[in-house]
Image 1 (cartoon, rainbow, N blue to C red):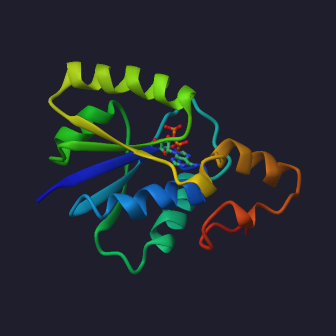
Image 2 (tube, helix red, strand yellow):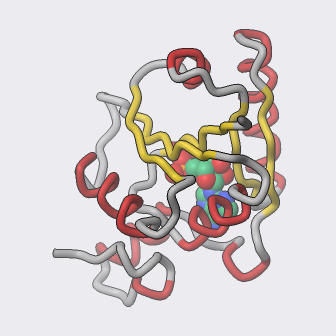
Length: 151
Ligand code: ADP
């Protein structure tokens, strides 16, 4: 069984993430959406909220699981016995950044990183932009799945 993790902060889940996960399940038997917890980072949404947004977006999709982790992504992969990391690429800056991380991860463990290019219509979306729109009372609903709503 081919399993991958899709790691990230998901603060919050966006239509860009959603697109990569949906397309990822055509390649893998299971995808664990893995929310990384970094105690020195400030988040707009709590861990529970971020987890709930993802679970609610994929209630009809049994191949998607949601988990949280701390520490190195490759250690988490070993813990849950996953061989692949799925990542999305939006632009050259993402590529350079992701290349360094993927090489480092390969040095640390025999885990392959698989990249999917973003779909053209969601390639400009980033969680940081969504947070900015929310902070400034803009209509963020066009950028996120329906499960992502402010209380
Ligand atoms: P991180 O904190 O690692 O940046 P994110 O939650 O922002 O986590 O992103 C997780 C993954 O989703 C990364 O691989 C990132 O490149 C990808 N991603 C983010 N936004 C998009 C998008 N609009 N289209 C496709 N992939 C995206």
